[in-house]
Amino acid sequence: MKEKRTISIPNEILLQETAQLIGEGHTVTHTVRGNSMNPFLVDRRDQVVLAGFTDEQLCPGAFVLARDTHGRIVLHRIIARQGDKITLMGDGNIAGTEQTSPENVMGLVIQVIRKGKRYRCDGRTWRVYSRIWVSICPVRRILLGGWRRIFKIHAI
Image 1 (tube, helix red, strand yellow):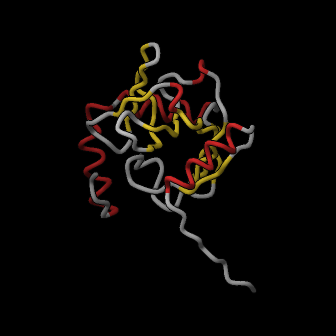
Image 2 (tube, one colour):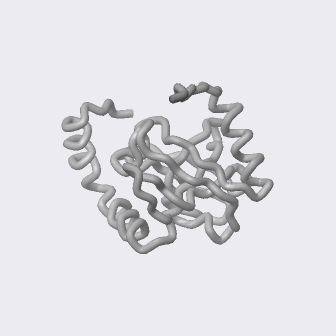
């Protein structure tokens, strides 16, 4: 049996290529890196499928890959939108948001592969899951604190 090789590519190069492929009409699957989307997306375990999008799809609740106003590329949820001003926040964050605009969105997460199981982001299960998590933002500190202690995850 052949050994599986892993190649590490800097995010700036990888994600620019991702944006180009999405712009050409392809979907791209990436393994999640980082803890800002915990507990729903876990570092190096879960994957997201990114695709193109319409302006109407860039609404609260959607997950996007975007460059924020500081130039960082993040995979976070849209929590608010006013015209061309989009506010993002990671599900694993209890405070702190990023700002972006529609032209800086590189792709929309259309499917999540969590623990090997696929969830369509426009499906009922994922929408309910998302709505509940966003609505309990004030008590996230307690839930995330417990989750991080159990799984020994460091806060961001």
